[in-house]
Image (cartoon, rainbow, N blue to C red; front, side, top):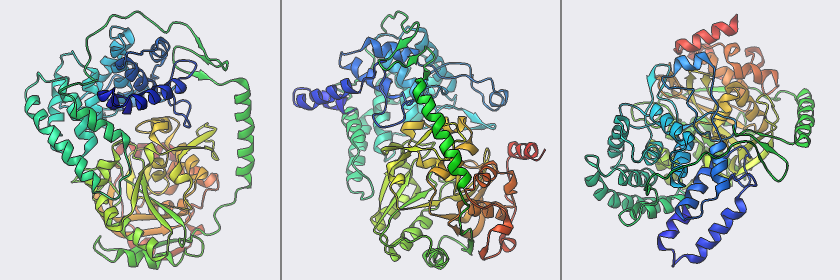
Length: 611
């Protein structure tokens, strides 16, 4: 993105452009792909973006074209998955990472890059465009991959919708027109990323009603958003947003995303490709590791198993429940009282503390996220206890534009008030870490650097049911600690390997020191996004996260024995689950417990587990 933006004034920035091109040359893998320099090798999605820039700047690499054409998303024979979706799961597009399923954004980028490189008529590109149309909503816009889940229509998202429209240039379809109309409704937002992608995408669809007047207003909106962002103290430098702004503001003179025309193509990518290190790559995009690497993984598995057998449950599994009538109560004072029971085991003084709230999506009429006032109270607790540094961090699996979520949810106001910075874990530097659970079959997990280096990590979830996992609490909240740049959106690699398996693997690999659950107002029913508000009136704290989550399940009158990741975690000695093993502090479970509704799908799953 920086190369494209600087190329708008190529003579002025010749030296920087030359350095950027040399960087891309060094980043090129032997098989023609581009991968994260220090991240997960399977994350092959940068290949499309690199090819697009090459094509725009007149330097397309045939090997990269060939490699991109060979990467295929997986298909599924899961009848249950087919019944719960209204999309064609047999259409093949592009995945975020090799050997995984097709998703909207990597498919849109691949189609756009290949069309720009003259491969628009290739059968892979045509099928990719069919996938995008299949995923688009009749009502307008597109999500990351699904249209409906459990019968409920999902909400579109501006970023994927813009990429969909860029990839579909020159096509005529009602869903394309509806997507343009959806983007027009986003033209008055305050977020730079959404505004810029909206301007770039609408510029290539000028013939549709309403676009021209919107384009005239978007420049001013982008400049205002830039000015507003410069006054916010919790954001960090964002070269991508700066580059996007330059590209969006220049569309009247040059829009690099506008396709010059549809070139002819000849099939490429037949047969096998071989890399210099002897790895074999087949046309389905799956790389088989060399024999020595596989042997190393086998020995690491034995070592992890031995460590697991020696692992002991946490020495202190007490859980404290405190009443908190509403968010206007003295939450910091309540937390201070709870913390006294855990202070000897979790010291905050002089520590670098990372707070991980649950920030998934934002809807004004839903209670999806950890309430900002709870986060504010935890920050106040850390300050009172003398923490050396406090950082709030999150890597949502749904919305990739996390700055928008922080600002709209009200969390940004809290960060500004406390002068605390925010880290987008989805784009944080990955840290390759041995997987101490191995339930997913992965030798390593890529943690975000902010989380890996935290001296005290505090999980701050909301008390919610979950239509797949049963309940989403302090352990499920850890999904957001793994960078999306390594696992895609919505962290589909981890879902595919099993939500329960992934939760336990992450928790064993980087176990938080403390959990504080926002149970003042929870969510019941179709969580984590579409459930109903459930006033509950409690804050729950503990340093054994499994014990905390088991206690929360009992407060919701859910059986912990039916929550897969709790059972697995208990078997792996992550923590204690049985009520008799968990000392109860503060309020009793019986005094506060009330039933939380669950979705029919979850009820059927629990019955199967019981059987």
